Image (cartoon, rainbow, N blue to C red):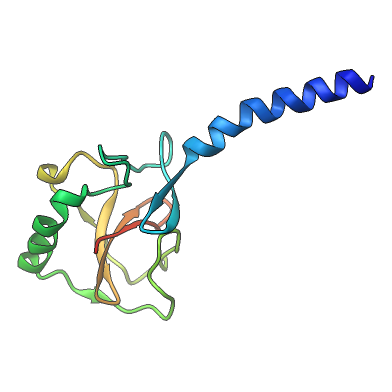
Length: 125
């Protein structure tokens, strides 16, 4: 019985370790959820959302679009959930990569958001 329990524990650990590693992606020192079923896109450099080389052009695009900034009392960090009302999400242009995420500006910072959950998946620096 003891050997059976050890074998089951080892199998569960072996199966869950790759899944846990695959489900998290580090973005500038913070952990965000990424991958299938989460509505986010993982780009070539391993980050979630807009690739590093596309970010300057994306910031320029946001300025040109004159997207209003919404104020919230909380810090703007990956994993935060935005309020259900008062924040409008915008489509990310195809030129910045195919993504199911939307963007908005919160507390002066451009963020990518998973629209179904309103969870921030990337803060564009």
